[in-house]
Length: 244
Ligand code: 6PG
Picture 1 (cartoon, rainbow, N blue to C red):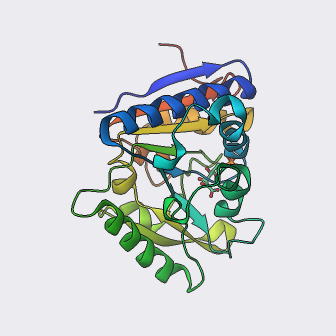
Picture 2: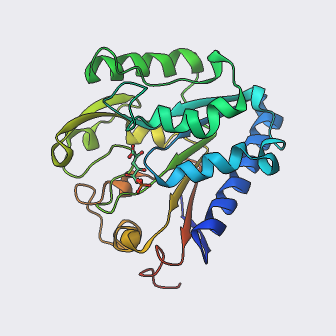
Picture 3: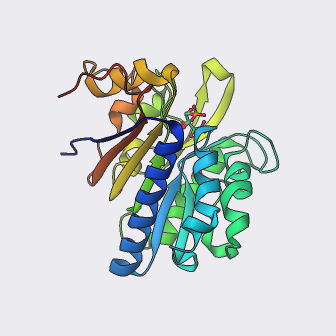
């Protein structure tokens, strides 16, 4: 199905602008076609600058944010005030500056523990989309140097989850729980965009795209959306890809 489309730029700065333009285009298209734009945000450190860019005057004026609905692809098992919280990062960089209404942002509520967080978030998503399947207009993802994406970590049971849902996952290497959307849910998206930069990601990018299929080792290989698949890379992260 989804042949990846590569967008390689010379610098991380240029990659961020490339993704920001893509985000704006998809948002406008979704609002024109369906009257709203639904997006699942990624966490970690790479997307912070993207979110700040989207909130900056050049981009923020291009989207009708009142019609945008924000979800999270994964969350750490911490309160929303914690420095590790993906919600906190997105709120600081994008959601608060945009001045969104409460009903536009769907955070993963970790207050009752990871299993309850996952159960409740599955329900939140189901209720939002109603009887329709939960198809995000855009899913933003990052890539760890161990080829994880969202919180689909190597050798975890959640890699085998067949249902489109949110699930808790114990991440041995981090000695902590996380909450993640499952691959079947992420794969329902109209478009998935990976944002990856830096030389420390080059091997993972190569493994995920061209390594033999081994989803236990390279979980990002599970991302095969029904819609489009885009990779936004800087030259350093793309360095081990063989030109086709
Ligand atoms: C998270 C993520 C995770 C992230 C990768 C890459 O909560 O950490 O959503 O999947 O995208 O770990 O993170 P960096 O961009 O910080 O390297």
